[in-house]
Length: 288
Ligand code: G3H
Ligand code: ZN
Image 1 (spheres, rainbow, N blue to C red):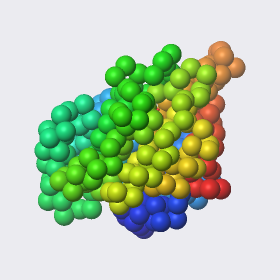
Image 2: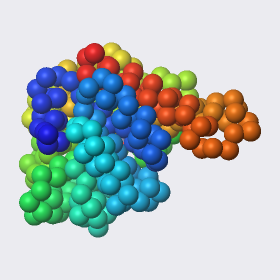
Image 3: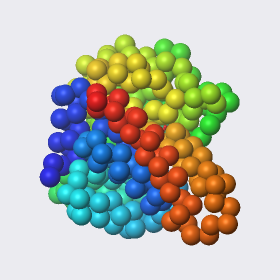
Image 4: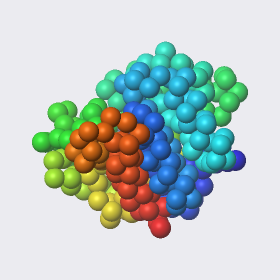
C-alpha cells in the first residue's frame, strides 16, 4: 500500500488531485468511500477540530483504518485545520496520516514558528506524517454564504505571495502548502463561487516546488479545478457541498418515510446523496 506522501506526489506528477472530503459521521464516510472505491481512486478523509470533537479522535482513526485494512484501500485520514500545537500532537499521536497547522490568522513570523514546531514533532515520531501549512486567510466555516466571508480579500494584493510562500516553506519544512488564491471556505448561495487565480497558483507552485492544497473547493467550477490541478494543486478539499448533500438526503429520507424509526433505513438517501457529490468531484479531480 502506498503512503499518503507517495499518493500526493504521484498525483502532482500525473496532474490529477486527490479528493479530500470532511466527515462528521459514519454515513458520510460510507458515501465517500463508496464513491472513491467505485472509481478506484485514492481519497483523504478530513476532520476539523469540531468534527473530531464530535466523532472522537481515536474513534475516527479506528473507522478510517478499518476501511483501509478491510478493503486494502488507499484511504487516508487528515487532521484538518488545527489551531494549536497541542491538538496537532494529539492527532499525530492518535495515528493520523497528515495534519494541518492553520496559522493563517497569525503574524507571519508566529505562523512560521508554530508550523515549524508541528513539523519537528511529526518528524520526531519516525512515522511519515505529512504536515501542511496555511498562508493567506480564506475564512473558517464550511457553510452556505450570502457574501464572501469577512476578512477575506480576493484582490491580487491579498493573495498568497510566491516569494513569501517560498520563505515560509524553507523556514518551516512543511510538506504541502494551502495558499489563498481566490478560494474561500464555504459556498455562495446559488452554488457558484468567484473564479480562482490560476496564474497565482502557477507562480506559487513553480516557486516553492512542493504540492499545493486547494481549500474551500465547494462552489468552484470544473474549469477552475482543471486549471488549478494542471498548475500544482495536488489535493482538493470539499466540505460544504458534502454537508449540504447529507442534509438534503436526510430530509428526503425522513419525508419519504414519515413513520420509519430505523436510522439505517431513513439515512440511506443521505449516504447516496454524499456519494453522488463525492463521485462527481472525484471524476473531475482524477480526469475520469
Ligand atoms: O478544509 C476544508 C475545506 O477547505 C472545505 O471547504 O467547505 O468550501 O468545501 P468548503
Ligand atoms: Zn479548509
